[in-house]
Image (cartoon, rainbow, N blue to C red; front, side):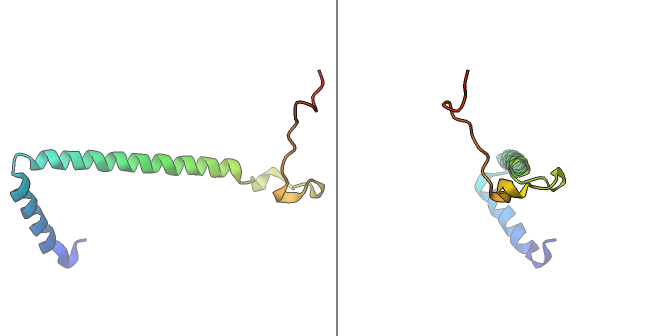
Length: 87
C-alpha cells in the first residue's frame, strides 16, 4: 500500500511525536478519526440526497410512453392559476 513511501510516513509520525508529545498524540488521533467519520457521513448524506433528487427529476423509463401531443420530454406541465379555478 505504501510502497517506497514508508520512510516518509515514519518521518511524519516522528515529527508529529516531537511537536505534539506522546500524551497529546492519541487525542489528536481520536479527533482526526472523528472528523473523518463525520466527513464520510456527510458525503454519504449528500450522495443519497443527490440520488433521491435525480430519481425524482429524471423520468422513469418503465412508466410508459410519453404522449407525442404533450410535447415530449421537454414539455412543461400546465399550472392552474387562481383565475382558472372557479368556486
